[in-house]
Image 1 (cartoon, rainbow, N blue to C red):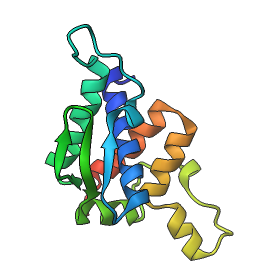
Image 2 (image 1 turned 45 degrees about the vertical axis):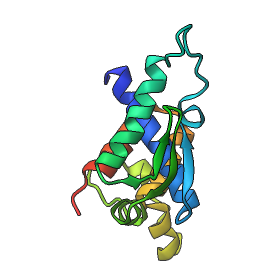
Image 3 (image 1 turned 180 degrees about the vertical axis):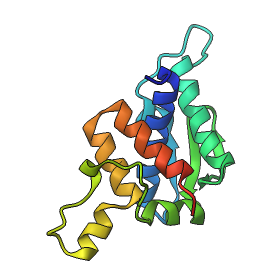
Image 4 (image 1 turned 90 degrees about the vertical axis):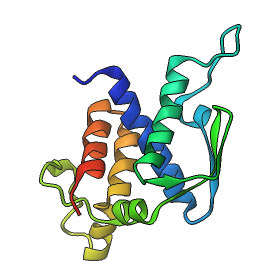
Length: 149
């Protein structure tokens, strides 16, 4: 079992990438609360560790070339975020990773074009998020981040 903060990182980045892919090529605001849930700042106005970890995950996606943004909205959101070309291509590409389990393979009776769509990184991420399985989300995100192209 991975450290809980790493599982949260994979879930946060998965949700952010799905949001950006769904809006592509429009620029959108990525709000931390939409990804990590509601936050109750303390009496000094400081955000929780969970909120800040999600905000950090969004900044990491930008630093690693998965998204661009115009500015931050305090520590609440990224303003006018959009996927980079690299991220769009990666998410649209078939996963094809040998580490992917058989359960992620589309039904062979489906037409080839449909099977291709169902085997893309973005579809595997969506399916993993729907499953609510931390292990599956982590596995799919590792394949997305670390697969060589």
